Amino acid sequence: MLVRQAANVLELMEYFARRKRPATMAEIADDLGWPRSSTFNLVGTVAEKGWLYEPRQRGSFYPSPRWLTLARIVADAEPLPESVHRLAAHIAEETGETTAIAALAGTSALFLEVVESSQAVRYFAAVGDRVPLHASSVGRAILAQHTPEERRSIYRKLSFEQFSATTPISVERIEAELEEAAERGYHQSASEYIPDLAGVSLALPVGARRLAIVVAGPTSRCLERRPATATIMSGAVAALLEELPRAE
Image (cartoon, rainbow, N blue to C red):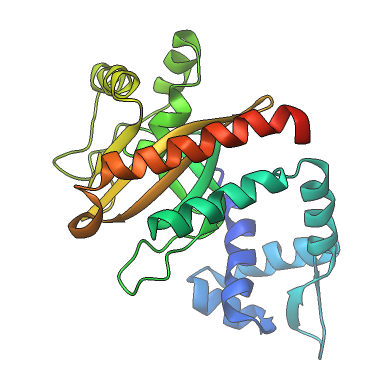
């Protein structure tokens, strides 16, 4: 269920991140396609709470440093171990493809760390991007770390939207995919969510956190290389998990 007022606040912040300069209420309303009255109420409320300010002249708004302060506090309280950042960078270098660390966020896998490939044709991803749990190898790598009862609870929330002919769209198919991945030793995907994209994912349990790591790229380059990619990833992840009890 989407709460529109909450979604609009987040959309407002994303708008400023793209714009990178102050905006008037009229500009915000026009650019986001919001009614003027709703924009006035939302912007006024956020400014009243101290999350927007008027940097140049009255009527022109921009996010206040309060957002940065809050983000730093949150990130410092629950940071990804430095070794996890190094793992993503190492695997990206070894495979030559975009590598990401993800965690559960509702019915999606949310990217917490992304190291993009340097190749011209590559998978473009960014921290904060989300992919559906059922339609991605990284989503299933997260699901596999949950108990059957926990998965049933998650499945009840999924819409099982079909994005392509290869998208698994039932609980039975997802469970079959998890069994096949357990036998294979890794999770894989081919154009399930994004056309012409192939991915390989592994579970990455770090302490109490059930993370997953994915390497993805164009099918023309990555589809046949999935077993080799998985071998590179498995070795690096095993080394990290041995290191963590001593270092983290």
